Length: 510
Image (cartoon, rainbow, N blue to C red; front, side, top):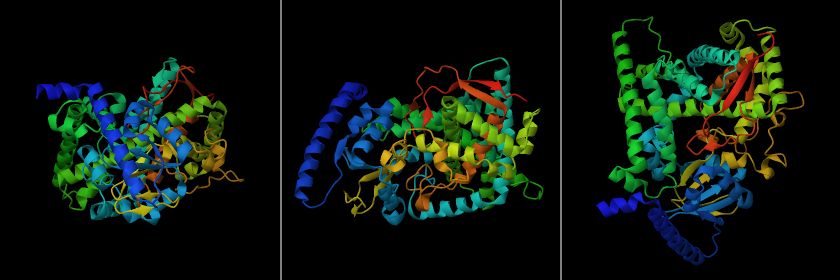
């Protein structure tokens, strides 16, 4: 056992073994392809060993491959992994032949420790049941109104912290602040709980947030680490750390669920008790299985916390790099809200962020969407093929193959967006009257498409517009160090590695 442990702990040994397996598999794959004659398979772009070697710049590596091949294969010892940046293929996978592509057992095994049987891990009846219930909840006026109040309240807290930093010319990590504020917002909307991680008053909340981020990164690494199941069985390395992090998550979430159940039980006869949060509304539907509720809520959190916070972080980064666009957004906010002078941040957030005012912010909507095009919250999304198929570009897919579309790479493809694909241009989303216009969801894939299209799309836009409008209405943002490179951290969501350090100054009239 000791020699086995030493071997498994040695990255060189693992790498050599992995490379040997991949080479053997390449030879086998080539022989099989020769035998299968007329079927046309995507060109081989590399192996999952290449992904592992390029893990810290994974999306750059895969964008380079997409630019060269559009659709390509990466070989692994166990299956083909097919990646595509072709909108026609994306429509086929996500809509036309939807029933043939799902999460499958492969994705489920990787994701289940963190996300359980939630909507992002399951297929079939389990998925349809959760989709139906969640779709109804997201469409209710109760949730829309409740969440908007929460967003306004929490962005006011955030803006006050930014104001203090601006007054003393202090640098702040705006991504960290967004993470805390959106976590507070999601916990209030999901659990009805005031986490208050923004003000640092909840040590448990901070531990949960750190454990959640670490779990996300380690879960994604399973896709390129062929030894993860061995590590999990032996409980060492990254899998031991993942197990510890998930225990922190579970302890925290189950405690909240028990507390909410007791609160609901004690208030059964109290008609004035408000059941506005997601957890209360699920309990209202007589769903009392803690594990089911845990999975529902964690999937909701991963959909709403990191995605919004990371998009807002990249948005501020892009506005710092393009100050003229930042000023144009700020001017639109001023005109939409009718506020010539902002004397009180809380009042501005509470009274000026009406649905009518937000609807007028077409350029802001376009700038946020342009950010999502270049920096999608979920940079790659994978499905499993359930039976042999042929994609619109003529390439064959075998049963059991992993098939992934790439929002990050697609946002940079010139054949999709033109020669200026890598430029930040909010105007590409506006018509001649300055009104936002939609693009095909199979071309702009940040929110998925087809039957699995993101239920929280409007929810996310509302939160991002409220946060952006309050902050940009009150402050001017600049990078603390213009020369410092800003890169992503490779995990399920596209975080900025090391945070985004900025300085803020009050706008004139504040």
